[in-house]
Amino acid sequence: MRSLVGWLLICCAWKVGVTAAYQPASHADVFDLCGRSDKQRLAAPNDDRQGRLLDLRVTARHSMYDSSDISGQFIVTALRSATRGQSLHDLSTSDTASLDFSIQAKSTDGRDLQLASGRIALGTKDRLLKFTLRRLTPRLTPYEIRFVLHGQSMYSATTELYYLPAKREGSSVKIDALHGGMLVANNSTGFAYERLIPFELSASCSEISSLSHAEVSAYKDAGVNTIGSACASRQPGLDALYDDMDSVNLWYQHSLESPLSEASMLEEVSRLKDRSSLLSWHVSSAAMQSSTVKASYALLKQHDPYHPVGLSLSCDNPQVYSKADYITADPGSLEHNLDASQDGKSDLSAVRNGGDLKGIIDLLEAYSEFLQSLGDGSKPFWAAPQISATMTSAELWVTVVLTFSRNAKAILLELDTMNRNLTKAYGRIAKAFNAPEVSQLLLSCAPTRVDVDNTSSLDVSYWRQGSQVLVAVANLNRTRTSDNVIIDLPFSARRVAKQPWGTLSWSLTNGSVLSTYGLDGLATSLLVFDT
Image (cartoon, rainbow, N blue to C red):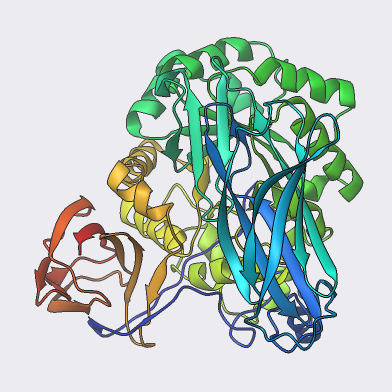
């Protein structure tokens, strides 16, 4: 379940300006994860306003709704394309023309229930359409949803909508398909949904089965909020461990790393699905044939629709994850392509052994580009950077900040690479990122990066929602400077409302000039601004 993510060292000037919206690196700048040719990559789905196809899509905003929800949202897209979609017969229609639409659900008795209607312009991407859930009856099977566009011809797209009976035991977990956030509900939250940014420690079967109640409590108290393992639930002693995790509200991601019979998988589901600490299921697509991955996903959703299913990205069958609720990367299928395609841009073996911080930006943007090219760039990406027990706390913190600044929505580290000091450091920054003032902003939009010239050693990103802005700063230089450090912010703010992370003393002048005197090597900061 590891992903090959490294670290990038950038050196240089201390004044930072001009911003650019978050987007993947260009084809010319970044190697491809799976070694595809430029022709293959450039043939990926795209928005072409002169295209002769209509790329029409609809998906539910959340991976599931339940009867505690009053309304829901659909995310709809209607783009002209040269490579993806249905033949567009309304070719005389301008790319901004509006067409009538309707969204219907097939009821239990076979009737079409209209959930939304109106007009939508060609060229629309990720428009939110609110609808009431009261016309639907909660059930354990998904509703078939049909999005219809009425022009000279009729165009349609379909999806599934889960509207479930609300649970009063165990846990329920949603994924936000628009921004990638995770919402969790269990007895500890009063079954109200709360935001969660997973900071996971992934453990082997022997490691997890040997954890004592004191160790489980210590991880939780330190700030680690998730444990992941592929250990079979029938392993002796695991029921007591699950009891311990339930008692302290330490979440659990259960992975399926090898093919299981249907009977064995159903046994896993029945043992875990009503646990209050169950967060999600994960299927390693690298270890299975695509048909097995699809069957595993379908079986999990059929017997436990209350929890999301993540898939690891595999170069051998990258299309199998189109329905996955979130994506992780699997080094087993990607490593040879990374080594072959990066042309010496980073030494991955050095990264694994705590060498130069080199590669994280290239690799994270390569992941983002790859997902975008397959048409699923909005799926949450759970990063698993390679670390070493010889790393310092500062190196770990820089890695975490850079990972989230590149739009990751969770982070997974391997338990066997962590010592006590690193675990404490990991937990400390996990608490900062899960503070309400941070998680609310980080999970409400994609990051926007400050466009820094090639000589800068500062990495700066921000998330803006309403009247507040979250700014993340990372110094990628290992040495301290005593110079005055100035960052020209791309927005005007009234004040620094809070600094949830970091020890640097920042001051705001003229509404948009952020400065500090002196900068420690590998220093990191999170700041919340009122605008």
